[in-house]
Image (cartoon, rainbow, N blue to C red; front, side, top):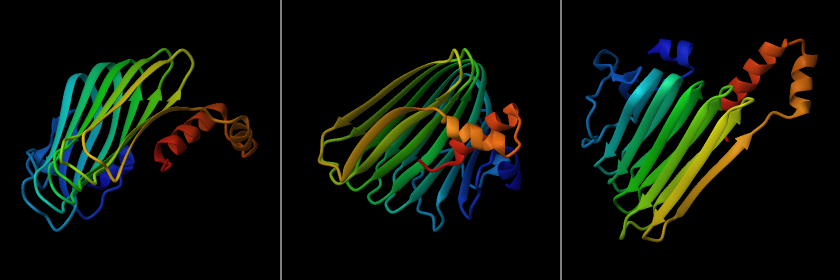
Length: 224
């Protein structure tokens, strides 16, 4: 699994793994089948989704057991028009699904993240980061649903984008809450490097291209 770190900057850890590359499940890199998580594991379940995608793509994450930790690490490039749907359903009391989705779009992208709390005391915490290349089009939608009777849930689906010239970005965050949560949040923001950040990096001897690369790496890796 070390190549995941070298090529995609994905932090691997002691975990059960479900790995996708270019939108395709990789059994040779996975310790678990691509199926609902209906068994308890001593280790976290790490879902790794990396590579380049185009056309229609779906990642289903369903948790049906209590006290299970699930981590999603996604880092994908979009060079041709693509649709990516991530559907998360948590029906396990005290189970948590958390993760970071990084989308590097230089074409046309429609992204939809749907998070459903189907039992009380569940957590779904997903950060979504978009690198919007020049003249790209991105539509990012997120819906967090807490079903009736599912009290004390923790829900957060957030979006932040770093946008190049000519790029178009549309955010559509939404919450549907039918029970009192522990907390329920959503957010959408545009990040722009400051002049002082750029001047500091140029002063350190970096070229224009190197400054751009450093800022993008800092944006995707910083825990916001």
